[in-house]
Amino acid sequence: MNGLVAVDWGTSSLRAALLDERGQVVDEHSMPRGILTVAAGEFPQVLEAATARWPQRQGMLCLLSGMVGSRQGWIEAPYCPCPAGFPEIAAKLAWIEAGRAAIVPGICCETQGVPDVMRGEETQVFGALSLLGLRAGRLVLPGTHSKWVRASAGRIESFATFMTGEIYALLRRHSILARTLPDADGELDPGAFEQGFRHALRIGNLLQAAFSARTLSLFERLPAELGPSYLSGLVIGEELRSQHLSTGDGPVIVVGSPALAQRYELGLRLLGVPATAVGSQATWRGLWSLARNLEEIA
Image 1 (cartoon, rainbow, N blue to C red):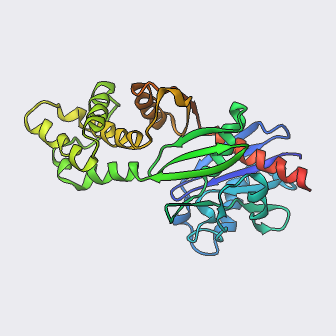
Image 2 (image 1 turned 90 degrees about the vertical axis):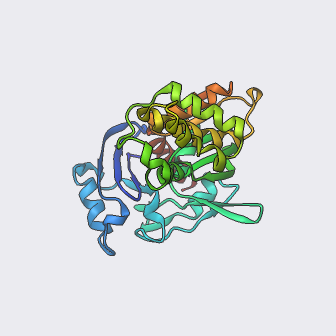
Image 3 (image 1 turned 180 degrees about the horizontal axis):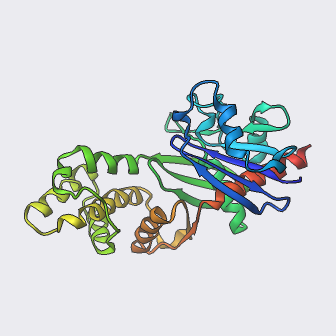
C-alpha cells in the first residue's frame, strides 16, 4: 500500500490526514465542515477541498469514518452487528468510488432487546487496540454520548452508550442549576470534581444527586466558579458507578480528547482502577489497520 487518505467526518467538523506507506501521519488538518453544514450532493466537493493540499493522494485509497455514513451524511452505510472485527466491517464498506474510496460502516448491538449503535467510535477502538498492541480490553470513549466497549480476539463483542455529555449540557444550560453556574466552565478543579464524583457514588441516583449542585450553592458551601467541575464529577460519577468497576478488572483504556480523558482518568483513579489514555491518533491507526486488512484480503 502506497499510503492512505484518512477522513474522520463528524456532525460538526471534518478531520483529514495523509498517511504514508508505514501508516505514519505525514500531514493532518481539520475544517468546520461537519455533515450538518453540507448540502445534499455537495459531499464530493467538500472532500475534494479537504484533500486538495495533497496532490500525491491520487491513486491512494481513501477511507472515511464517522457520521458521514449516517442517514444525514453522504450515503448511509449499513450497521454491522456485533461481534464485529475487520472482516465483518470490510464486507459492509459503503463504496463511493469502487476500489478507491469507501465509508466505514457503523456497528450495532442489542442490550436486553433494545438496539444500540455507534459510528466512528469503532474505528477508534480498533486503532487504540493496535497502538497498545492489544487484541482485547475494556474501553471508554467519552463524549456527548460516551461508549463503553468490550473487545476480545480483535473484535468488538459488545458496547453500551451513556448520554453523559448531553445530560451535563442539559443540566448546565437548561435546568434550574444554570442560574447558579458561571457562564464559562473554566479550568477543571480536581477537588470540586472529586466532591461531585463521590456524592454521586454515595447517593447512587443522579436524579437525586444533581439537586445538590443547587443546594450547595444556595447555602454557600460551593463557590459558583467550582459548580461546573462539581456537576461534571456528578455525571461522570454516575456513569462510572453504573459500570460496577473493581480494582481487579485491569486497566480501562480511555480514548478521547485530553480534556475529557483527564476527567475519566481522575474518576477511575478515585475508584482505584488503572487507566491508559489514547488520543486522537487512534482514528488514523484504526483506518490504517482496516486498509491493511483490505489489502490482505485482496
